[in-house]
Image (cartoon, rainbow, N blue to C red; front, side, top):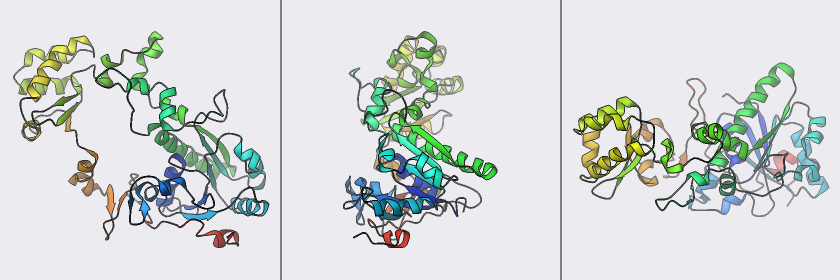
Length: 372
């Protein structure tokens, strides 16, 4: 497996750090999770459960080992430091300054283990005026301008729902860690990564930064391509109160659909840049899609070369035969479901271990003490 022989110490909680270390575990890394004494990782207790564990915990902590230590106790902190001496990677998600107070910061750790790749994930990074500001995903999205792009039909900001700051931080951290490990093969030297979830999130916005960068102002959101300004990148209600999405505004798709619907006269307007010129096309498409059911449109649109999809609810989406064919959702013999590893190699593919650890289950193995 790709990461066999790599030992990872995971000091992070919630989503960004645990998600990236789980992906590493799926590909053979030995991931040792440090959990707070007592109740352990907070997401053990958040949300719906299946087979004795929350779905959130199940899909961020499979295949990991668990140790539980009180880092304010000198002997237990020293036990962790000795374990870190043997590690290739350390991931932490404390507020900046915390690891220094605990004596497990990069300066301390790298003196003992110069090969360590040490990754800090925080809301706003280790430097800058906001470094100590607490924040989870929604606040980071709001501070970064992304909530202002998520407008409801009343024109007011609405909760964006998906934790894209968390997940952007997770994937940027994973990319950085793998680059550092690759470089270490040549230099023998580890590295330190300062991953800001805000930095990571904003790096995902090149498609919406046109107006802020080129005109030094905020965009008029509802006139932008990605947010309803175009007729072929939009949502439409059907006769049975379902919805469908048109998701491709290239000229060929505009031409194909409007020709199939008997309105080639609207092709020119539908191919213009997003904005008010699309209003006649939007009106036509709203009226047209409202005239038939989603089932009828599925039959019709499957015969047209156009980017489209029904708007499925989350349960419907998980039942899709395509996902089953891809193995995207793994179902155990007892019916327990997991989100499978999305990184699909031809050689040495992921081999997730679906087992989950109890809090502190591996203390004795890794530290020589039960610390009970």
